Image (cartoon, rainbow over all chains, first blue to last red; front, side):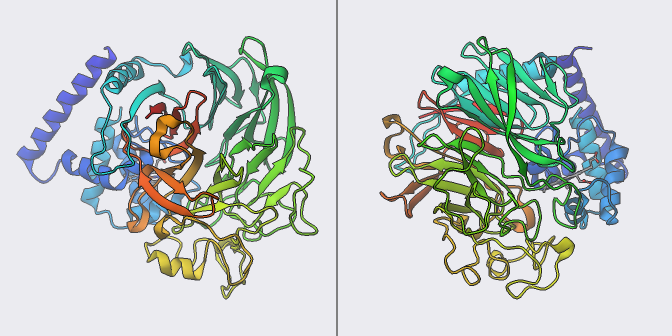
Length: 111
Length: 426
């Protein structure tokens, strides 16, 4: 698959996911909410494409489960890497739903 | 550089290049603002940290975890010196490594480059345990395809080897890292406090300092730090200086420095001066602090009024150090990651000719406005005070502006952490 195609496919996948969310209501992650939150709380360090920069790690290419697990770990005030303290404080007010939305958004959009 | 090119970035490059053509922006409300245009010079880089340009536009640049490369006036990029674990460079130096904020940082060209072909790079190295920051001098070959004769002219700049209980407390914090030649041909080196409580005021440790040295690493004979200080020290008591530029008229060295959750600073340096940063425990009314570093006290991780912070843990402690150098700008009390500084040169900049520009890299922590921007700071005639501050109306998306460099062509070259170097023209 060419990269361009892959982007289009990802876009379609996104649209489908968004549709699914609307249909089932509660269970599936809300990508739009994840995007909104990401662009307010995360983008300044992890970048517009989740590419990471400076000493802020890349998030792209990660599975949703990986992202969610890391965010839960930070929220529980447990260490991941040596700069965890900042993520602990940033994730302290994330709800389970916020985490699911963010993880879904990051995994879907940042391939 | 082939190792970083993929189909996907290539299509981004195309899109950005096309966009750049049309991106002139007019600032309406500001009489000082000029109509600026932008050109993408490089994209898809790994945390570009600094650039240095020759008169013909040849641009040396560093990437924090990859190494040193050169972009020729044709646009062709040639890797020169890789760090440990990199591929695609003609040579790798296995002692050069990156960790957290540390890695390959500043780059400067010798004023006599046309004769000696020497360049200088600031990088973290494992050659001396447990790691130090160093200034490397190297000779560039005739066709710009390699460097040789590496000599480490400074080997002992403080480096943080272990994690501590601080925000961004991992190893590699606060290295300073900008290197620039001053008007009289000496090399100035900015360093950082490495989250070390006693480092900035230490007479012998080189962290939290500005050094002034010759091209062999020897002290400038006129450096005037107090008795007992390392004679390479020009000023001390700094936190993390990532910007230094020289006033075009007075020649004064002016630094831009990151504040701790408050008070970024611009300071006109005085030979031998103290910048007044002292995060040591049990000083100035403060008690014990996490990992013996009070720099983020009284509250390391939560948002808090910046003026209360500044009163408790000042960037420039004039009570303890009444003779400390008073900053001429404190970013309205905010800390937004003020990094690099340069003077705009040439009449093409109109009213901004001779103004200082600083690159700012905010992260929006704890209620701080993000403020990723370039500020244009006009100084008075003798460069002793700020007259006016204008945010540059950018013809490119904002981002973390790590490096700003005045080019020989009168343009401003700016690097963003996200991986792009642009040329901004008035």
